[in-house]
Length: 559
Image (tube, rainbow, N blue to C red; front, side, top):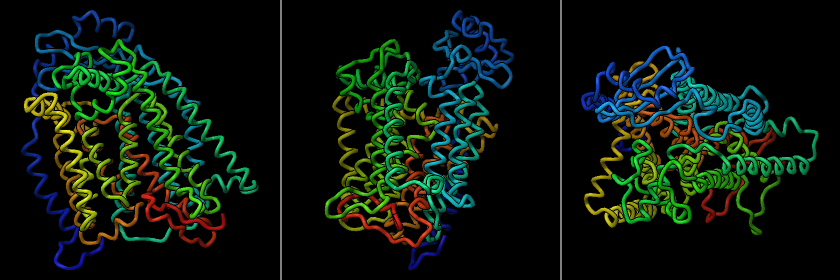
């Protein structure tokens, strides 16, 4: 990091101070969920259940492990070697609350087609073709490789290797976090002259021919997404929770404490995770996991396609009569959209119906609207009340703003938050607000085997990781306060946002490959955009209309 002028402290100093203060505080405040039953008793009670017997039939399980889930439930996991076969929730009275028979399911959730090795291979090849550059010896291609390795956790999770899945994600996520943090906060540099790999391999084609191929590829991939996603037979429990909560709101009730109970802690999300699905629940209410959630599946697919459209416009620029697109701009936009849709895990994620794809769209458009602080902060606030993680970006988004722009952003944050809390109070009064806070707190306190800390056996050091995230945010805020001009670069803001979100995932109590959807659009707007903007010939920046609200991600020449 570079130094700062005036009386403002150096950003690195701020980060170190926050780390040194936060780490011991978080270490002292840490407490694991209390076990409701001794491990041997929980395992014994689980084995007495007929449903558990059916789940383990023919599996030849070799070991069992019990761990606290929340203070009311024990999780009992059965393994064959390192492979997870089944998970069971056991109550304090010994009754079994929920059984996941993973060994008897072809895929954990989502459409089996999206897990097929041939499908993942084709998507990975398309991703590399659209995101890679020539010459091959460029840091950009290392970024592409790191992103491609994130398909490995999906394959391992599909086959029940829980620890292996989490550990396999660590190198790629850690690399991308560091790269994004450096891109956002490090010194400015001129883009390296490169040629998009697709154009390099098709250099004998006419530009019009390449454009037609890109258009056909995007249309075909969008259609495949729609068919696989909407027809998925195996939606995730999060989709059911969102729809069940939306149905409760239609009945005039808050989800908190009023859910059917067939999804454990299905009421642990902020209120907008349910409220935004109310229009779908009004048409097709969901009262249990036996209902269909086609609406949630359709929303996930539409969110993925909307994100692709946003990335297309960011790279291609708006189409206006007064500001025509430069030659090759449409091709750049098509490649950007294809990078997102061809990211191999995305089709699986969308086919689960998870709300994480919707969150990805919110985050992408919040960054794309960075020239309009009011709109950007409003969308980021909605994302925060949809899932908690986006609130970590609020200080970074506010730090470089001044005057009216700061007032507009702060007003948007306050307005969205007031409206959201107003909805909670209208449905449940003050008790409803307390119930929501208590339910959401589960995400901060839950016991989980599915985290890097549990996989590595170092859960006692997790608070130090959390302190590092706080230090990253504090250092970024200090840097932006001292040099607000950094935020004039949309690529930097996208990279910094991605770094913080990846860091949050790495220190969380629970990690799933579904969360990769949050970061891929932001990585696409930063690491995977910078070299695509440059051709092998001298380039010139192409301006975007001042009122477009879309960051300029293009440096185009010779197109």
